[in-house]
Image 1 (spheres, protein in one colour):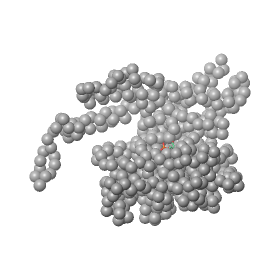
Image 2 (spheres, helix red, strand yellow; image 1 turned 90 degrees about the horizontal axis):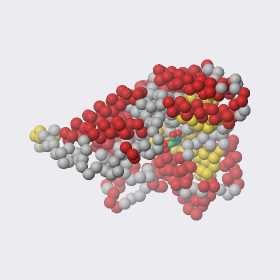
Image 3 (cartoon, protein in one colour; image 1 turned 120 degrees about the horizontal axis):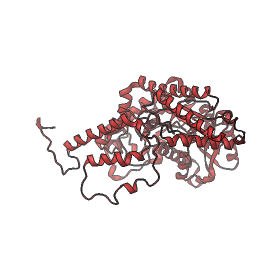
Image 4 (cartoon, protein in one colour; image 1 turned 120 degrees about the vertical axis):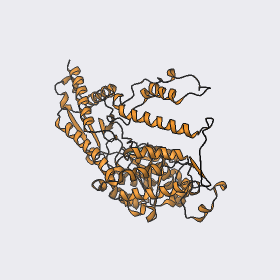
Length: 508
Ligand code: PLP
């Protein structure tokens, strides 16, 4: 129904339109019902997809249908052909990688923004999209207790990017151009980027894209003595060596919650060091940043005031659907100078007034989605109190799992837990009854690899691995929205059963 000149008029259904309103309503309800049933039955599916490569081609037609097919037929095929090839990230026994935590407001906010179909590249193209993003980024920044210099209200500002990779390219490009304005473009080959051996590879990709000489990408070794966090002494030595060689230190990516071990780099000392050499520090807290809405985790951000930029993925552990990377910068102008273009056809009074943010100048792409809406729905629907509760509950479940591991001599925790990820393995002790295979650390790695593969092939639970200091480590990452204690217990039972079978096989 619509209102025109005060009169109520009926929308006329038009089956030939791609947006027939009654069909939209009918099919929209069907999809929600389909997904509600999916969540209800999600535990029946193998968590990690069990299909072989190329499984789908033989099930589908060779070319697109000439005549239309009904949504009923298509949904049947989704169930029959697509679901088997889906790894069920929302399953309560998905403990792999990092979570991609779904929620009702996260999902509905996504639907709402897709439904509006806006393309908010600058303020004018949808003022609400820009202004809501300004507001939620300041809200979220305050929740994390970020220094006010990262907020619009304090002269900085936040932007929603698609992924951390994009945030990394944007900030590294800003840092590069800022430095080249000082030392001259011809010196681009001298710029050096620093990361640790635990830093996510996206910074390397960003360095490649930004034209950093591949010989100038420094990977600094971490060790168990710092729980695989970056040591400022090692960083200091690397910086000094580069300066002595006539190179120019440019950019350091520090991490709060590294990809494998969830290690935390000591921000205060490394930012202090970076400042002495005018190095841009980006803090990547893709997964663990969300935990910092709880005061008890905020000490991990100690020293963040010395960083230039900070990002986290709300689509990992903040109940907001992919994609939603939140990036804050202390100096938006550095971003804008590197990423701004001013085509004549986008000229408008609001931009000229300098009173608005044009987010196209804060990111790589021109067009952008109305991501702020889903984050706004999440923040309002749950409030800080419930969001903290969800995070703490995940951390408590991880702690519970860690306790189960610690009580069983066959297993060991490889590195102390910081957040909701437990890094563990079958311990050397489990194998002492079997001298033949007790020869080396490599053997132990191989046995743990076999254990993980046998668990994942069962479809009951899905976990992934990482190498930490040469040790093959199984990661148990809690964070799926449907996970409860019974799923943690179920996973623990599956792990022990598979380990028993493996150890028995080794003994015969
Ligand atoms: N940084 C860290 C610490 C990560 O763990 C990940 C992915 O898991 C990323 C960055 C990459 O994030 P994105 O996929 O959003 O680029």
